[in-house]
Length: 248
Image 1 (cartoon, one colour):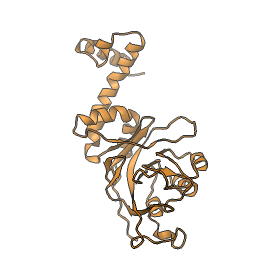
Image 2: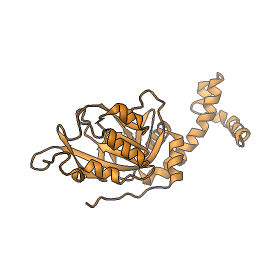
Image 3: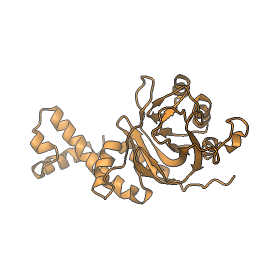
Image 4: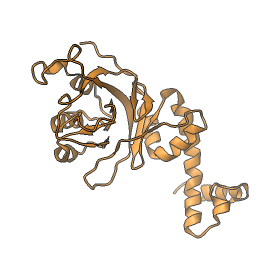
């Protein structure tokens, strides 16, 4: 079975995007023409633990509605025909698997064993526009996951089947291309087109830098009108703060 591969961006770029976070990147990307990169629906599933921030290239998995003449395979009769396995075979360290599960709340796209396998391969995280199963044990693997919910059903038990790997998908109402950079944190997950990534990082990093200063001043009771957004009258003060903190 021939599965398309992806081109992975540099680790340095991915790490830098993760450090900025989804809110700043999303806001700044809107000024570059990507008005809504938010994958709406999947939320962090942590079992009460602190939400990790992840970033990595997207491996995509597409589900479609079942139809007997197109899909009539028992889950275990031919395991290698199951495309949800094939996407996991592509996982390299730092990759994010993104699943178009059509927002379905009855099909468990991955269970404990598949999540365990992905974690063992060094995957960075899992984004599912739908559900997983075996949630308690899946969470225990430590793999960061953003999903809509949980179900006891397995992936093809009800109305869907995994159709294709590393094809363009819609996830949470957003186009995700194979190889896009996914950033996910407590606010949710966003997709960053590789062609925009460097520009997005540049503007978002500058934004994040002055926000650090503004946060510091606002915590001291500073004037919101002066410090957020940063007013021109505060620029000299901001630059002095940057110089003072440059080597800390």
